[in-house]
Length: 482
Image (cartoon, rainbow, N blue to C red; front, side):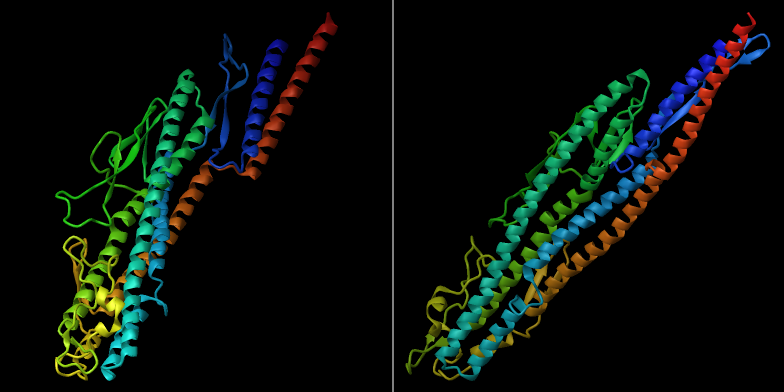
């Protein structure tokens, strides 16, 4: 009997020692990101069957259970996808918004007001060369602002494309790591025991992927996972398919060079566009393919129609040298461009004649009237002329308005997009934090709870030592009788 008691006590000592080690592991990793609380599952040993019944043989640890809820993981990753995407869009749209810097005394709205105002001043003094110099300077200022806006948008696109390259590289690297962890987990668990540490590491990588790429996870029976991006498989067991970026040039190609060519994300050897995208990846592609081209398209439309409207009025006027009558027919105020290089925000500039000589600026619409001011008044009237700018967006909706109204509408649109992304980022970050809190309630480590478990295991361990002492006392009593 004492032999049986000693055996039971021994299993109890070893089992509770391992249980205490599990509690210690939890306490040590209470602040480790991605760590899942572990629990030693104790079960009774197989009993001995006697004629009078079954006799217990002690206890052992059946498994070290990893506390994790797949449903809570899925909820967290879904929320993280939305939060990652809206936060990235907020950051990128804030950068696009900063290009225009409105309202500002040095912005386009102020420059247009000054330009129209200089023409009003010229209509009051149509013979003044000094005011013509001011008109020249104001026209150059407006053209320069268009050029600067286009340059900054190009810089924004370049930096966003670089971020896209880095993001795709990060996704590929994490996918490779998940595939490698799949292989290691399947191998290590082939003996029937769960590898908790490797699974925790893999879940950390899966969390990162969900935020960056909006991936979904499918659990497999052998312990591996499949990772889906869009409607395609990114990781399958120990194999990862890489993402790549390519330009999507329109067919047939446009007659004039395009400043913004769409990019597409491809998976593996496929030539098709990967869709749908999610997370930060989607936000970056949307800004590159839609928001920046949309802003540039509006600027180009405004610049081209601005130059055309001013030139249409200006070319009907006349310039005068001294008192020579009749005057000379005026040329274009802005460079009209060409079929291969049309006027755009990037190319808008004064005509070569006006840029060199402000006396080439016409104020009169009468060849025999040097004091006439009809041209100056006509250009000045463009300030309030409605419908002078028209634009058809990527969605097919048409817009029109005055030059200043159209520009303000464009800036307001970008501002509203940024504000919407900011609001959405706040909401989805809150939802992500709530989902993480629910997940941590299951898988997170509470040091208070672990300390209670430690005391409970310690008491069981102490009880086992007393059992050994009792068995020893019984043995000594037996020996004393012999």
